Length: 451
Image 1 (cartoon, one colour):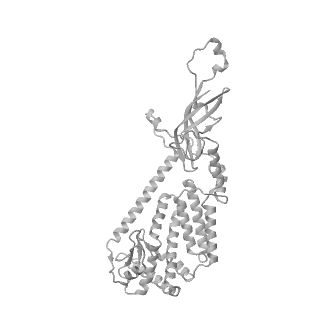
Image 2 (cartoon, helix red, strand yellow; image 1 turned 30 degrees about the horizontal axis):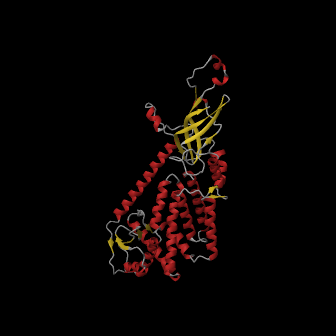
Image 3 (tube, one colour; image 1 turned 60 degrees about the vertical axis):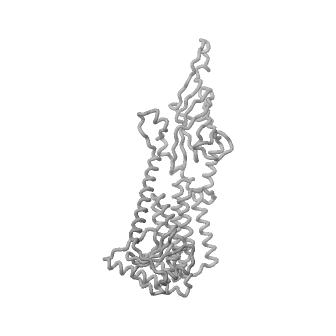
């Protein structure tokens, strides 16, 4: 599956999840939405091709040839091979449309990665003057009591108005310096929420999410997905924190969340309404979604067996319909391979068949790509009049175009009929390019065919 199909598949899952979330958020468990977001990220990063009869791509590929791909915009632009550029020094450098798109994509990836690195350095500088709490403080003792496999440090910072957590190998919970750390009830709620972020590796998930964003930076649905994922991470930790603190403490936990949001808003008013910048790769309170979180917490309860079964069925259905490949497309690719035979299994050849060479019978070529050749021989007057001697002894074929899914063979065994004769021989691969929009390789072959 090519990057275009991967993004179409991921975008469909994102749109479906957003629609389902907006209509049934309070009826379906949060873990189901988190699972669907994880499916999207995997779809954006892993180019698998699992076939399914109910895949949406059955419709996509059904209309593709008639509507979307009536013509290959770059098929007339033939790339120049390295050998050709060396032999013809005056030949200008030609970049195909596909190669130009690849260059733009690579440039976008580099820019996106650069922005992420810059943002991470900014967060690191902002928190470099944190103060580590003493071992006998309540916060440190509570964290130690959780007995996680990673050591979690608790720090204070002047540069924050709300608690945050982060770190993959050395996780840290950072509290605002002006918080009343002696208030154990409020502190326990805040620590429990941030601890859930660390326990379930949300920072690592954010890194993976950003990797998907950098690779697929051109897809606007990816940026929408990122915002929804962060919101669902907060809801997930709220649910886990309430379950850990017992259901009877739910009301107090909600009051703590509201109090933290109010403190953050008051701090922003002191700064003339200037909003605090969110720390990159750190999990912090989202005050903009406070109403949603409070409503979900008030209705929170353990998932019933019926709801769990329904959630599994939804995830399975979404995976089958949107995250798989059309069975017809795979069969088409297999037909391309089975009807041909590979003559070489090196370099650009993909491992796929048990036979040994590719045969292109009755190949059609333009006259401009064929040069007739007659060996130098001594002919008598009678010989010249024979019609068979007026036919070329061999044909030179140049730039024969061969297109298929998957990698190309280095050599083609070809035949062509001309002037009543069958010319056969082997064509060598001169150059090729890959089209992202169609997931096809186009090769250009040259060689001699003899009668």
